[in-house]
Image 1 (tube, one colour):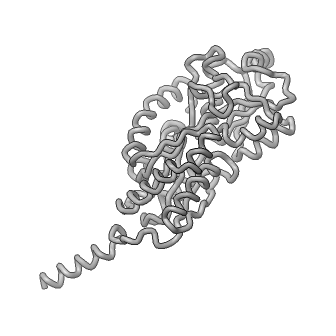
Image 2 (cartoon, helix red, strand yellow; image 1 turned 90 degrees about the vertical axis):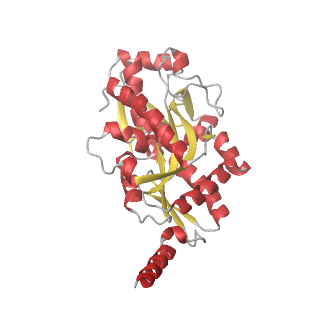
Image 3 (cartoon, helix red, strand yellow; image 1 turned 60 degrees about the vertical axis):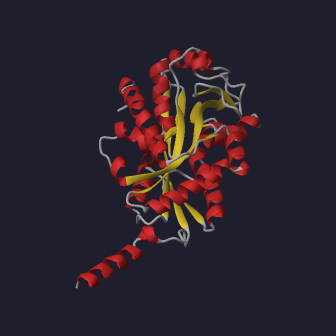
Length: 318
């Protein structure tokens, strides 16, 4: 009887997910909690394509839009923990949401398992090229002269641009009216069409329109100027030294995903980020490849939590 029980236990261990030495054996779904065409989607597809090549299996991007990334993140949390569903996460979903939403749809520390950091991305404030505002001071002064007349769009609540606009208003005294959008493309269309006055969003999807002269950048939100647009000053340089924020991203998996799968995905992700094709493309879009271990994701979250908690409370964003 004991020998039979021992044999059964051994067979169960061999059948467990972590014992699959040939992982991955089929396509991997990468859930992106943002609309197609935006920065998160473009970055996820870039890294997913290279991971697919390295692992020899398709990486299928699935966009789950809404609630500032919470709907897509919840889909990752609820997925089978078998290594075949992973998620693209960012500072919004991993840090900001803890302080922005009273109702939590999941426990980030309990329900997700980190794979690795992907990239850091600056946000930028832009206006239509036909706009009369040529610098940040002129724009802020005009908004103060006629409060709530000038508009500034952002992504939907819980994203770095949405919080970034609120932080911008709190720290600069700009009297703009914020309008959140679900997709970058819709913001851009309304800005180019003259329906809104300005926009704060991730820089990469806007670089083409900046180079074509259809948009004018007033400021980037990071401490340093962006490599792709070095002529654009930072918000801090223009009289607001405390203002700084950026978007960083990571790959995650449902809690309980086998350690072997996490290790394989982490190795492929790091190799992809080191590749000339991916690193060159990211840097051309002013994104800095990050990489590292799952523990580095946890360390990044731990570092950012107190910073954003104090910022959100100070700006009364909750």
